[in-house]
Length: 312
Image 1 (tube, rainbow, N blue to C red):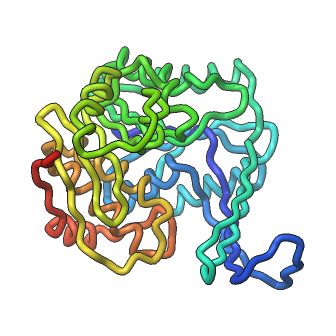
Image 2: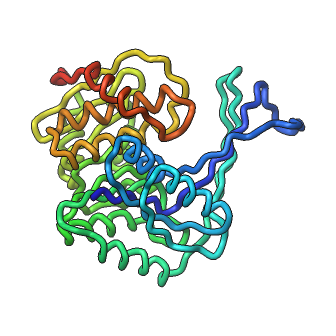
């Protein structure tokens, strides 16, 4: 079973306003409202791909119920922990004409140590050997920065595998722990290892060694439309993706994580997991909805993703 952890989910309210200006009033602007958070998006993708998944999340109030209802509409099983306040919201203002985005994000409701322990206890009770746990997103206020590392160590004790896809603020604090897969970006890695300046292709083998020593078996670094670099125990590979009409890339990273974990759950090779991961990310980018893929489209895109040895 894949168990997606989204400790602090969110309701995104997006407004599309061309030529947005601070201090100016904009009337009768409709919003696009969606349930979000990395784990929520990944769980939605897995449901669309026909892969069983359980979502674990803290939710509260009317906005929390929106998260629950969204997951139920996709058939995602949920284990929810009630908070005293509302699930956080974010306001996104997209100025497409000028290529600008303004975002205002709430922190979420602070939880107690007892509430956090109840979460750990339930996850420990549910975990089975061979399960896949996805540690993603951000913590709830009141939790330590190291919470994802603690969750990964819990998974290891129970014989489960753990994937890491957290906000850069938490990456370095998520170790020591073992992860079969991680999706950091270069900024996170440079901060974790105190690297100054730009990284070149020649730096990649040394970088891969550093990440492996942290406890990561396989990791991917996105290069946008150029594809991704895949770092494995067998070497470094370049995954190239087909050119498509990208509508909205938000959620593509979460879809990529979902795809890789689906591949692992189905016993695919590392390279085939990467191919499926990239196809899920591309499919998401081809739709306006966040964390949305089409199964048939993903299967077709997989055939168009190429993976070759990286020449650094």
